[in-house]
Image (cartoon, rainbow, N blue to C red):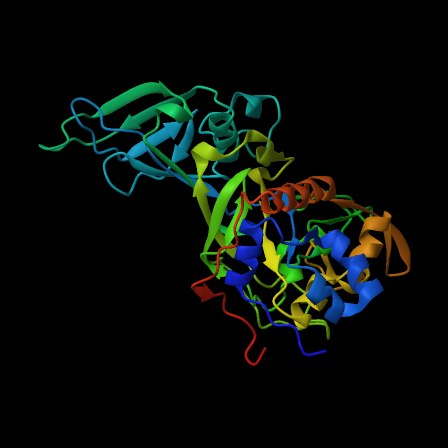
Amino acid sequence: MGSVKKSFAEINEKIRKGQAVVVTAEEMVGIVRKRGPERAAREVDVVTTGTFAPMCSSGAFINFGHTSPPIKATKVWLNDVPAYAGLAAVDIYLGATEPAFDDPLNKVHPGPFEYGGGHVIHDLVSGKPVRLRGEAYGTDCYPNRHVEMTVTLDDLPYAVLCNPRNAYQNYNCAVNLSKKTLYTYMGTLKPRLGNANYSTSGQLSPLLNDPYYRTIGLGTRIFLGGAQGFVVWQGSQHKPDVPRLPNGVPRSPSGTLMVLGDLKEMKPRWLIGVSMQGYGCSLAVGIGIPIPVLDEEMARFTGVSDEEIVTQVKDYSFSQAEPLCEASYAQLRSGSITVEGREVPTAPLSSYVRAREIAEILKADIQQGRFLLGEPQRLLPSVPGS
């Protein structure tokens, strides 16, 4: 038999006709093991992936509509969370990690604020009213100096989720070698190797199923926050040229995505405001990417298992810069790993259950012809020669 070669157009035509074979990345592991990558490439057209975890580099572009008389807002707050207003007139950007200016919970729980931009985004998507307040210096064409109103997502003329860095391709496992508890974006880390936290969905994670980004780039259609969104660029801190395993999997944090979608179409289950004790606020984001099985290599990539994916275990007290060891995601998901001769309990910040649900939703949507593949117009920067 000759080599398998498929195109995006061919697979999309099968989707339109209801003939595409679609499986989740979790299911693809068993298929590749049992039948081999060549046969899997012949039989499977699309592999769906998913991840759901706090993704701090997230936010929303919002236009709140012209006032009467008009205003060129220079400072804007949503539920007392500052938004960036240095755009034009009534355009703002609300960052997920921006804390409330005067959070009442802060009086009870000293430390970083408990409510922030991620919570405002969740409230808007949930249909809740949000208090908007704006200030301006006033001009001849924009004489208004103050605006205060209550808005819902339906009231806003324009609201787009635009996240500069999401869906990290692998990430560190965090531990703490120091004698004091650390409060970090990787959660609370107990002293003296008291726990180990990680935040990737392993074999279901989108970029781990296409390690060299052969099918992902500008224009890739994705599941984003419960709606259809798009990859619009590589994410900030995108770093493809890192040490990798023979299967292409990076051994440390690597690729990232910049993603965009219509906030008005999204669902509160897949965009949830997060408060990290002692650290601050964020936004948990649900992302899923359908990966076309173009050939045998892509079948092999999408058949990667938790046993074949490793990450670095790093000390977040910074007493040691080099990784302490490596651990596979099978080990991390088992509930404990061994670090410096000690058994350390593990816990995920990402939800594998939600990641699986996203992959299943994508699978059903593609099978029923509701979701076509978006062929990238520009692939993400990859490893030279890959």
